[in-house]
Length: 510
Ligand code: FAD
Ligand code: DLZ
Ligand code: SF4
Image (cartoon, rainbow, N blue to C red; front, side, top):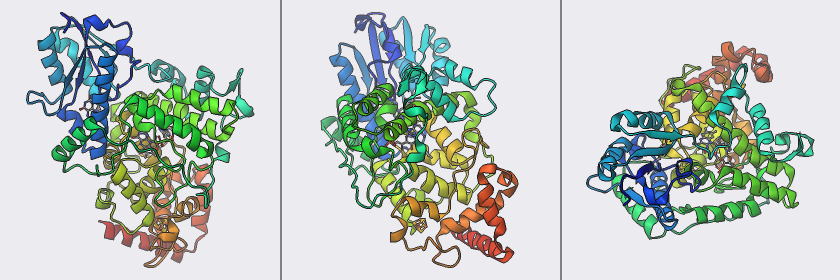
């Protein structure tokens, strides 16, 4: 080990070779510290596969760093002296290495950022906290954009990112003349097109050891481990990215909002776990997608749609997370206080759409966007579930969930608990939307066409009841005018019956 080195902690979502904390570092005079700690594995009850993925990817990354010539001090979860927290492990590392200073890339969330900020005073050595340059927009750029704006809509931030990166730009104009091709991307679930075969990565020795450790130590956490087939190295993640560009991207745009029974991946990339933990670089992926368009293999609506998700939505929610402050997690604009039903943790429900989205989530720790937004998220907001509880569920259950990305998506986009900072109206729908975009309703015990009676699809009465409950809040929202017109056109007796149907369903749920 080097004498009086610089200590460089690498956190579990910082598994990138191009990390800002490594910029200019001398491998002869640096010790990289990686820490598996109980606090991080239990601050929420993470899905077992999420913990297995992160620990395995960390162990593989430590190997890659060593091969690249770095000295890595790696603390495993079952080390008997493990202090159980980042700060506790830094304290032990300061004793072991007597470093002259600490250099660290900014943490991804308020909770951990506060720890990093305390280290300089606590340990009496300089701590250089560097910006996370893996994001395309710096926080200063986001703040500059947000300053003096009445509304912080993603679409305008996205255009700034297009100009900044030059992706799909012809000089100062967007490729094809339009910034956004979303109108072409709303095709319902296809009857014939089969999804590309998902890549599966057989667990190697390191992953098998981690799976054993997680099964033994986190038996009470939700989710299954039996079918773990995620990539755990940058090379494997790259393989998955290449497969997506060749087979998923061509139909990504068309079927972005589609859902099909038993088909988990459809034409999505399932690359979010790797991007968010650092194994893949977001801008590299956008350049790969752009090349598919430039070489004439993939249409503009698909490539623009994919790039928008990354340099638009992903960058926007990250900027917003730091912009709105730590108390965003407590927002509850709709005053919703119902506990989340137990079947979110078991998948046992007779609503087929929910059983599909939840079952897949519990099996794989992944679901695609429309399942998260228009099935599980829609149901939670319709029943008036407590947004803080919904936030905790999403944070624990998805393999790609870190607070900076999960919280704005859940509290803002999905639950409208921020009162409209992100979305201009709540993402709510009756069963009709789910029926249009999926094949779920055909296999359901409920009838999506009915509003009343034992067999009526629960989403229907819940949807109208939601509108009625919140008419004071949304009645004059122009984007909801049509829905309220339809509600107000109904006979009073019908309205009463629908609300009674919803009340009976909610009563049973409790
Ligand atoms: P694809 O459909 O292939 O999309 C491409 C990429 O775009 C994704 O890999 C992701 O990096 C990015 N992306 C797409 N939409 C978003 C978005 N809304 N916000 C940020 N990035 C986006 N994404 C997370 O990474 N972590 C989360 O914890 C998370 N929680 C969500 C909770 C809710 C309620 C909703 C509605 C969305 C959430 N998302 C989250 C966004 C999105 O659902 C996932 O990024 C996506 O499903 C990941 O699967 P994929 O890689 O196959 O995505
Ligand atoms: C999510 C997670 C888990 C489950 N375990 C660890 C861990 O043991 N060690 C680690 O460095 N990181 C872990 N992480 C990811 C961290 O929680 C993540 O780095 C922070 O959320 C960043 O703010
Ligand atoms: Fe879901 Fe209703 Fe369709 Fe059943 S009928 S799958 S509950 S939307």
